[in-house]
Length: 140
Image (cartoon, rainbow, N blue to C red; front, side, top):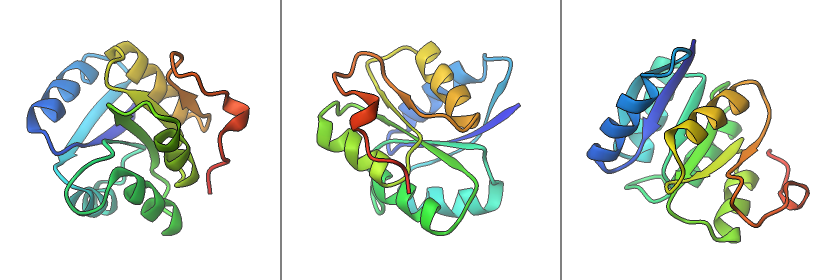
């Protein structure tokens, strides 16, 4: 079972994503946070396998949250789930240590695939993004 923590400042988004992901037989959403600092506290308490985070949140941004998790040596892997598809956001997320980047216009099936891929230690990028994997920075 892949244990997932969701971080997004919109409660309805967290609830909806959690409800859909919990239908997957191998994924369990174990909590949700409304901001980056709360999410970091929950990572320490819950030790999820994967954190799915928005970029723009109160306190720490999702990118800073990924950077904090990596710099503190925590095992939790990060996926950014964002409305932004611009290259600077994608590159910033991977530079910060994210293992995956999914845009919010994608399906829950693609998010579930990203979670499984990143949980296995591989990188995931939404297929529709016009960015080549080889151009992405290696995670820290």
